[in-house]
Length: 356
Image (cartoon, rainbow, N blue to C red; front, side, top):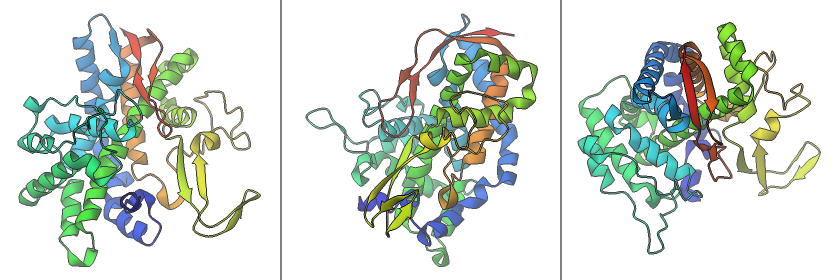
């Protein structure tokens, strides 16, 4: 618990504010605007590859389309070699899917295609115990391969600095006045490799499920592509990738008519908030023309997701490409969902696409 409490995600100001300042410059509207062209290129490349690889038009939307976009974008932003990006896929699976037998031991990364850093980090990958169970990935020892890679990448970026986030963090780590220590660097790396990956990987398939279940919305996007930004916000509201957070009250408070004592555990339900009838008219309806959409899928207040604009940019890019390239997409069989009480995850979504 003490280790988890040291993560920026679980801090209060002023410590949270200090750490957030190190990163905020990388996720401004201007910074995301610079990245948008590259994000669109990644989306186009992914669809090109799918069309070539699956001439029958049948593929798995999750693994063949949705999973790779956030990995490519994170590799760009953090200065990770592209060939190592599926390490992030496995790390996120193990952390978010530790309750799911298919994800808890995830090891899809092809070590032969990875960098020397990746091959060395893999040697530190935790091993299952005698019962086949992996160490808890929320513990410090449960992700030794991730931390090994973080330090190897830091060493590489010190020698070869660029304008990526890791180079920025290292500059601040080496500046005594900034007070970013090694442990904080590790935790930030953990947070962005997992949170910046898995949430979007579930948000994109969730949006596709929404369109598959509401074919009129797909037709609307074909005829009125200017609705795409609205559609993305509605996908995030309707699907809500992160279902809940738990917090601990530090002082007594009466909230919503409920007395909460210091030390009480409080469950915050983002799904409930996104279906609040006092805020959203007909919240159960998926409506890409919805005008007022103050969804809370990115949180609220001091902890509002730093990567919110980046996530929306990626979703706009991939769904714009899908609408432009495919006349229809149909579900071939039911989705397979992640076993989790935290992420509303999609493990598999078999589809058949028809090119325009």
